[in-house]
Length: 354
Ligand code: FES
Image (tube, rainbow, N blue to C red; front, top):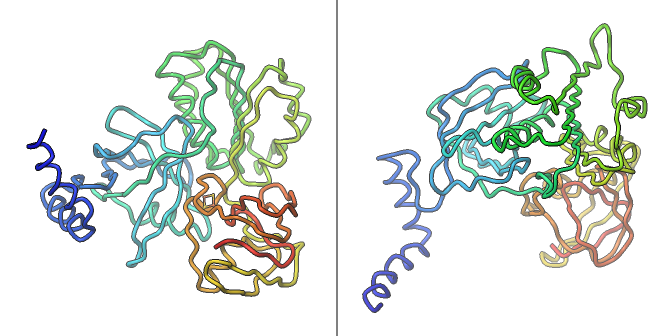
């Protein structure tokens, strides 16, 4: 016992020293780029095209990487021109050592575009902890998976998890909206699953082809049975998710994640004052813009992670004032509320504990 205590002391001291951690990581990574004292790292081992403007990276992860549940997201950290950026992606577990990261090139998508244009085999990526609650329900219920654009990535993860458990014991329906057919990813995989499991079916709806399919609306629901018993997951841009939510209001469980939301609601104009109690600052920000983005424009850098309302890293207490969700337009005037500043805008002067 005493010997153990003696051994633990220097390691603990070492672990608490940031300088030593950096030094250990630096020298360890000279020997093996995946070795680290404290970082969850992955090495890109293969890159392939998933669809038009979409790339999939097969990544070998180190022992500090924490696999999440299917459907969760991980923070991904990359350094671009000396600046460290954090974004969130839904990964698919391939086996004990590998995950699949799929990114879509989008306008102003700094990290996704960097990954798509610059990342190569052998590059090392750092990961954070998994988060998000769009995971498989404990009890099997018919599942309806609604995806638009990059919203397909958590659905792939969920389907792969079901396949690994060979658990398509209840009907699973995937509906996947894209603008053009070439933008539909993982189709070969979905076809294979549909051949393997009679309970699984999928459809792709291309909304900007000559024979354009309609966007998600009530007409689709006539194809479904047992809606009240179904679990529905929706992932896609905020407009898609906010359309899905009321349409599936009668289902057993509805979970959603929205991304690429417009960080600006053009219907709101003018400026309001926001007072930050901890940093003792008051600044003027535009109504209708994400509070996080507005503060960043003022050179204030609040803690954040996913920037899409999932990870909770940006949450702070709202002392007073009215805010509006950029995901579904819901307004909140309640004081003393937890506020996700990445997906809310200010409607009135605001006081927040930041
Ligand atoms: S940054 Fe993740 S919830 Fe706001």
